Amino acid sequence: MIAKIIPIKSVRKSNYSALIQYLTDPQDKSERINQIKVSNCYSDDLMAGLLEIQNTQEMNTRAKSDKTCHLVLSFPEGERLTFADLNAIEVRFCDALGFSGHQRISVVHIDTNNLHMHIAINKIHPRNLTIHNTYYDYKKVAKLCEQIEQEYGLTTVNHETLKDQASRVAQEIETRTGVESLLGWIRRECLDELKQSDNWQDLHQVLAKHGLEIKERGNGFVLVANNGVAVKASSVDRSLSKGNLTQRLGAFIPSEHSAKSSQQNAKQYQPKPLQNRMDTSKLYARYQQEQTDSARQRTTQWAMLRHTRDQLIERAKREAKLKRNLIKSIKAGRLAKKALYATAHQQFKTTIEVIKSDYQKDYQSSKTRHSRMGWLDWLAFEAKNSNAEALAVLRSRRVGQFQGNQVSAKQSHDGSGANSHFKDGLVESISKIGTVTYKAGSTTIRDDGKRLIVLPDTSQEALKDILQVAMKKYGSHLAINGTESFRLEIAQVAVQNQMCVTFDDKRLEQYRQQLMKQYKVSRAQSVGGIRSTPSTPRRSL
Image (cartoon, helix red, strand yellow):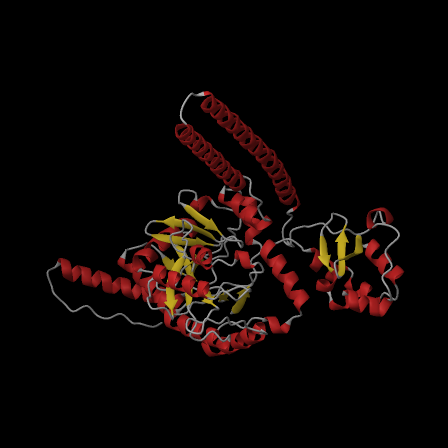
């Protein structure tokens, strides 16, 4: 499992209500939220607990740091735990971080292949009204993750204590965006050469050979690529910090030539997808062009909106001035004119407020229509619009084998690009590894191209719909993998609904045939008017 505290660097953005609103938003998905739990509040109701936590945070007026700790617990693909186990694990993490007794709201999400829990913890103690900030939390979290993996038999994964910070940062960026980062590129291409440089001239030559330049910025150094992308030198490696470099090479000597002019044929950093199994050059070029066009349209539209707003405000000012001149020319008493001036001024203020409100609405609408999209988000958007190549690229990012309950074909099925089987259904979402979630009958189907993924505790009615979809996609001979109880239940559903399906596993197929014989005997006895006690089928293979 992976546990991570999501940092909020700007206190202004630390909004507990906005965080809970995001976590509890179904996002037009039929299956996203599996559990919402309020802890250490007077009420278990979500809204009542949210108001109580907000009031507690407002009562502490001294704390200047973020008052909310956002902890995410993510479990390996296909591995599911009961609510009781999840709640016990949540308590252990909060206690380990020193938040025992603190108010919190936890939300379990199941909209991806990885079960994950978001825990929004109020750092302000409900009675002492003091803030608690954790230190070296990554060590505590990693150690507890290892313990829980052993206790619950979960897949063991590498934790943050096993890697240096620069590697973690580069891996996080590249995993989240799907695009090679400048930090990771420098570490792979030229970090060893930079460490071996004996003077500033050698260092500049190595950087120029890779299309880079080192510059002073603030109290440190930055490495700047030809395309203007920059990264802190110390974040690449601590040996490149200003203190370490000046201690090793002496006082900083700037390069006499820029990286652009000194090396025409140098290696250059160019953001590109981290794909090894597919050629994504054409797709990525189209993505970049669309983002450039979108940015240009966004800039043009915003300029037009500002111009229209300014024109309307100027017209409102002229109309207000004309009204004041008319009132001035009217022969009336002092009090009457004062009332007319007040009315005209109020009308002017109302008009300005309406103009600004309309501008904000149009601005937000334009921002939504022309929003910047990451590479993986763009691929998911294209895949949802029936772009088979984009879906294939997403599915090629999958690493490892899926271990959970699944229904697939007997032979290896290459469905990485085809999506015709869910065109008639309502596609709800497509994940960044190409798992398509769509409606089929009474249930939601999760299809990663090679298998249909089945969640634990799925009802028999939903299993029936899943089997029907699997038969349309793979044929009547299916492979059933997962827990023994799931495999038995699938066979029972197939028999109860008289489905013409067979299984590749011999023992499971024998169990299905045995159930079918019992079903036929029971049905014949029922038709003949003979009452008999139905036999209990075997519960294991």
